Length: 95
Ligand code: SF4
Image 1 (cartoon, rainbow, N blue to C red):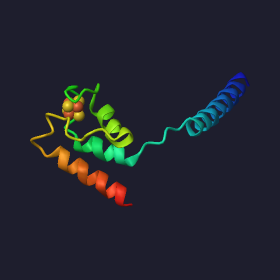
Image 2: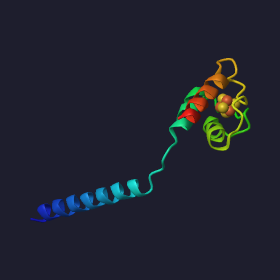
Image 3: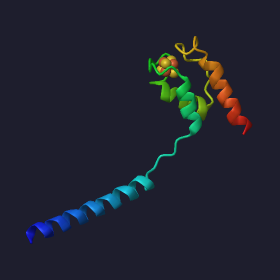
Image 4: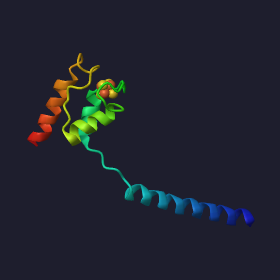
């Protein structure tokens, strides 16, 4: 009988913690701007810091949220990242 009670107790605890985690996940969900994700995908991802930001994600957020210039990524110059970022931003602004 102890095994049955233990299984019921642990099952109930697991269910309660699952509900709690589900609630917390929804309550503290962080909304990501899809434009930041597009700009981030355009950058080379070297996280070298040459743009003056600690990584590519910080630079992508600065471009989209603060209007920073899209020509600061030195490794991305050869691959045409600047032009693609300008294209993404122009599409965003036209919507
Ligand atoms: S310079 Fe380019 S590759 Fe380097 S961290 Fe900045 S965005 Fe990333």
